[in-house]
Image (cartoon, rainbow, N blue to C red; front, side, top):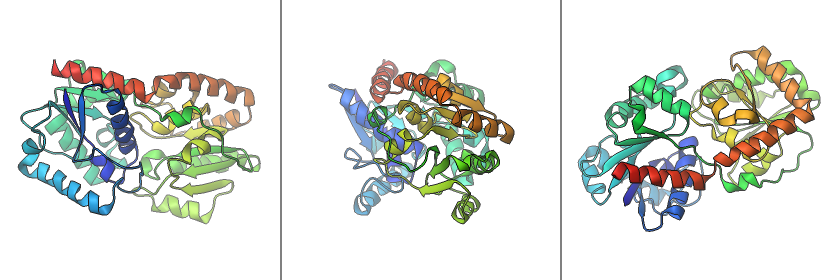
Length: 356
């Protein structure tokens, strides 16, 4: 089997999709045996994972971006001519004629909550849905909730979609807590409306927990983040904004948290939640989208629109070591489902099924 994976996200500023593509490719290759697995466009040696910029130097990035544009302006058949399967992303707008086409369904926020996205993101995802997802030979959904959204929103036959959970880097399972002067709750995510960070800041101020705990915020600026960033820069009692945290520092920061708090308005999988679980950290998150499915007994769940619920849950979780230990142990046990080796093995079986 000759598999070509669209890894264009590695050339862009990206969070969840880039994380998925980088680790998924690495573990597909490690599990491939005699299979041939290549990365489009000419990304077989992607470099180190950095979310804020391309994984390659500028001089190596620009020719690959040019190859992407060539694919979108009529040369996709030539660029995919040796592949049996082309696994596409929403960066490629034309379906090739020779290989079978597959894709990963990450989330459906652009359809379900368009107010939380830019106009460009909405158009790209919706065009991808009409032109590729509805015509693909097979699809991977990163959660059952995402699979159900695809069926409901796009009318895709559920038999064409296989749920294969994403993974967590191994380092999180053995992470040692980074030293900190005070216990802290932790939020990790891009600063953008979907992550609901202002709601969390309001709840934190109302909770009056800052006498005993800090709230650490880790994540780079995203779209429509100016007001939230100005608020963080002005200072909120007991809140420390760390900005973008490098990949090698994130496991220790996560493992050191008393609670991981994530009141997101929608997730397709929720990497930060799964990473916290792997590190044995109890999770406080939203009771919507895939989050109850992913966190299971490792999480305490709240309505992400109810400040009262979040304040009560923060106080309950942070003031009860027994409850934190209980959820932390349960989450660590459930996180065994989120091994990249398992994801890669199931994905290769999916690709063989598509070919047959």
